[in-house]
Length: 602
Image 1 (cartoon, helix red, strand yellow):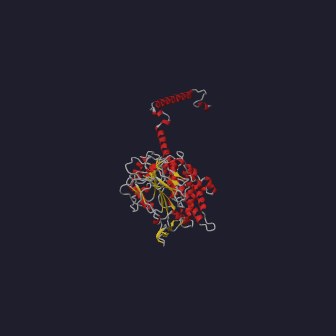
Image 2 (tube, helix red, strand yellow; image 1 turned 60 degrees about the horizontal axis):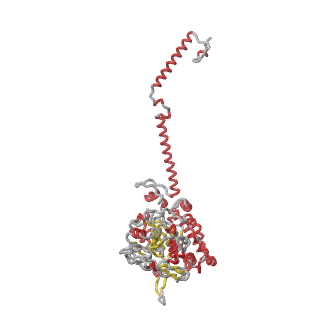
Image 3 (tube, helix red, strand yellow; image 1 turned 30 degrees about the horizontal axis):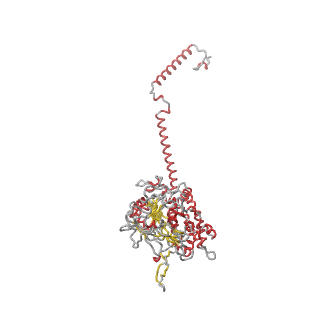
């Protein structure tokens, strides 16, 4: 019987007869087939012999996968970037428009790409009044980024100031609501102010002390600080500044608008009845003026007038108008308003501080810039003067030929009880014409000075000077000079100022302070100023009243809060300044300054 297992191909059993022939035939056929396959394979193209990872189909597949992954990355990155924009900039991208712009305005698109200007984005909207800062999305992020020093922005700083003003608003309402015998007193109002300033303003001051908040641009841009109190000429002042400038695209405004917004100015705010100033209505039996304060409509908003003007709307849309609003009964006087305005500076080349009722000469911006550069001490130079006056309003336009400049060469110790013998500055001799360079003076006028932006690093505005109408000019002068800044009078006047005597009956901040705390008239505000002016007198050197020991003895040490950060520099001393300006503080006398009147010092 045949063993079937032995007939398998690899069997090793004995094979004989017909089976042996069949086996050999099968082996021969397999051998021929193997040789044929080998010959066929060797005749194939070389490419077909390469590994599969190098074949064309495989490479095409890899390329398609790479494209798919790239598309997925772009989608995810765009989504993340969009979330980042919403989180940080507070804006939701809109569809690409005809001009090719997304969620940013053309100017913002340009600024956000420039490291020297990225802090200007998002722009601070100039309208609506009061609510302009409250409408900025993601305010908490902007504030935290600014206070931490990680990424300061104009919007973040404006929100810090707005938070302070809002807290002050509600604090004042609470204090003003108290009735006798717990009616609020002067020192309590000051203490509450200091508490809020320490909470909201001091952290901002500490982070950027002794350094510029933003990089200073070298493009001849000009920042104009405008403190406006119930101002009827604010719109004209803005129009004149831009219309008469040679380079209006390089002007940036920081305006502090202190207005009475009337009854029910916006949802959630009851508002107040606006009042006039003390208007002269006749004479008494002795021939003296009699005055009256009357109800008045809500104040004009000069920012709104400017920004809705077809000719000037472009400057508001481009972010060149930065505005903070506050209720007029929360005004703390010009020194604090100028502190707020200085914080809206955004790295512009030059800083210019003026009042909000001005007229401007043609190409005033270029003329003042060139005048400053012609000062011998430039760039550590300051131009300052009391501009000439005007009465007839001309829409902010100064016509005619510019008048010769006048030097601030005189001072006096005030004999007013309200001003408590503080030093007041005034003009001396004017330029005769033909002078090749501006000459030095010892004083800076708060109503006009023009200087490089670096001034704000050396001489930051003091946030602890509320209710002070006098004293800011002598402090500004001494602080600047001791920090190494020389002060010059411009040889020509390229702006004019509307001087306003009291009989015009315009509202004053001290009247608003009195009404807020239920004490009509200037009396309560004057009490506050008499306390705060001791801060100035302490620094100037009034040892009879205002040494540290005397202030502590009188319970007024709070006026010295953080005073070491807003005092004198170490380039020159206080004593050197007083000798140079010929001021005798102990005797309360200002002597003549011959070198100033004669224009001897370049």
